[in-house]
Length: 275
Image 1 (cartoon, rainbow, N blue to C red):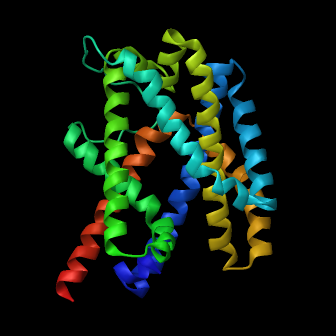
Image 2 (image 1 turned 90 degrees about the horizontal axis):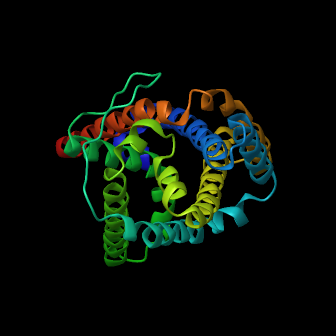
Image 3 (image 1 turned 30 degrees about the vertical axis):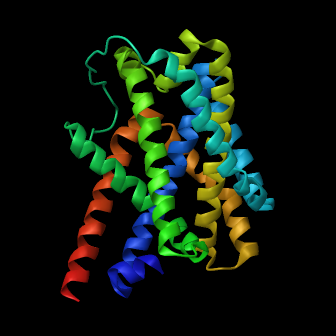
């Protein structure tokens, strides 16, 4: 409904199909991140992390996903707080330039930080269109919507700044590690790294469940039983994509989604101005 309102009926349905494909690809990215977490932190095979997460996601999405999804807010809050607690002590010191890493897929991200920031914002907006549209029914007033957006922006900016400052002190991790932040904590604060890895995995798992559950309902056209049946198989279908590697997928897929988001916003703006 949100996309139809923004783009019109014909274009809206086309964009909805494209975004569904992007969501499916994002499921592969989340599985790749879980595989990287197993490989880098647990020293277990990448395939074990991907397979375990895919099976858990399918089982939860097929049976009772709503309870898991309710935990997502608490898990994200815990993840942000743990980041701030463990990273604030290591953000001081000398910051070094970051060197580019070689990737299997073409790098589509811009080289300038400001354009990269705009692209990343568009990427998040595209993937959040559907849940934002659903949450709109729960917003009781424009003031509440503004305060929620403002608070969320502040938290994201502060958390992102802390992460960036910590990683700029260790640029080789950005160039070499699949999960540079986790690698930083493993080398500096092993106990904190274990806590962060656990919370991060829960966040990845709930994200996989949310994507799978949403895609299942889109494909089933509102039939709950059929939606859960489809959702049970979607993580397994996304597994081959995850073997391209987490960093490779992020370097290429996320900018592509961001460019699509910028085009969508531009089209919606022009359509509104001409209406």
